[in-house]
Length: 159
Image 1: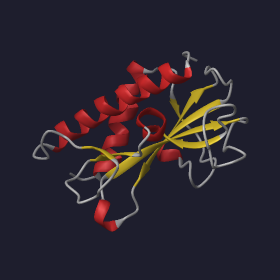
Image 2: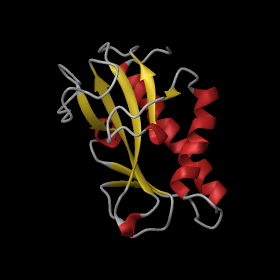
Image 3: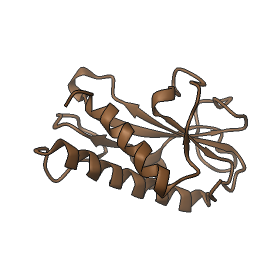
Image 4: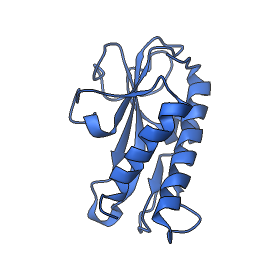
């Protein structure tokens, strides 16, 4: 594979979300080093909090966890980085960064695109690592299910 598994994954997410969630758009600028242009998406303000919502796919920087990633759910009162990075809970004010796994499963969730030894409270792994395209497709499907579940939890509307 010419590109990294993570780059291939983000490319596949962009393609899938164009039809599945057409209102979600890749950001056009990096608002903050923790919100890089290559892996951050703008969802909109159609949630019950009326906050700008961003999804950031964050890859692991650990050399023993190449291909692992998680998703940060960022609520911001402004178009851009939140005023506070430590999102404690969604109620009464979700301002800040939250891990999708913590919101949905009460445990940090990581996706493992490569057979790493990473130990996470909640980890997604494919049925098999033998076909890299199948791994990416399975991971996109799983992430999209979690994003749909997140939208149900926060009553996100399209647009």
